Image (cartoon, rainbow, N blue to C red; front, top):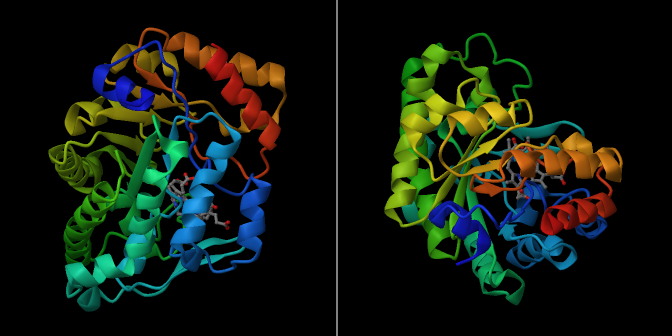
Length: 333
Ligand code: CP3
């Protein structure tokens, strides 16, 4: 079993494995080189040779304990025939959602559209660089995906005013997403993903009273499905107020925390394995500070099953040398 699986499944506390969200990406010059020649991000995700190569790039440099497949949560709306573009200095931009078209999507057509993602997972999980490491697949949570599908771009701080008006539309989208997220998850597991992470990046936009309908129930459904495939699931509900309530309801195998949350409170409240936490901006400072902050998390979770990670994706302006220093600090702890 790989160290991350040992932490999640066997609740080991002495291993301190590390991987980093967005570890394959814009802070690496070798990624930028490929990206410069591939301006269409979706096409790049659908190029299994390149996406598997990008996935493995950080493992060639650093002693990470996992590979996370180079893809995007928005590949699911793309698979449902919604137009998805990534605009420079703007982020994702989606076309109008054609609900009839999405509802009538056939399972095998969806799988066929995303086939290169699964092919890349096969390549990555069979590569020597991932032996004794975990290959991580992922999906966006239904709530976060619905935000993009209706809002058609990142909501930044708030949703558009009439977001919740069309209740029937919302209900239908949640049902479609449940179906196709399960297919996407199953395909990833069948292709070599040993762990699934669910990203709920916009969980923090909802009020407490709306959490059961938009987050707790749909996520619980996916978590149960992933667990039925004998696969551990890590949930990352960014920016929520009550991680304990979330964990009690959804019961993921591990919970990933963001950098706004106090790790001491989390350790006190939460019994399941914990991942992440350190502010990605720390990597933009200096070695002394990186060591201090990394140790703070490692000390706090010394006797708790803990996977080192950041509290959000690594920032594009991060110096690859600082990442190396972070990995060394965690490994030497
Ligand atoms: O972690 C990894 O290295 C695996 C790959 C991965 C990407 N996106 C590649 C990517 C993962 C796990 C994601 C998840 C994702 N995508 C989330 C959840 C995590 C989060 O950031 O909150 C979300 C909300 C998206 C949607 C998305 N994709 C946005 C908002 C953007 C643009 C802004 C940004 O952060 O870059 C993307 C583009 C994207 N996805 C890039 C990468 C490497 C950058 C593409 C580029 O080179 O321009």
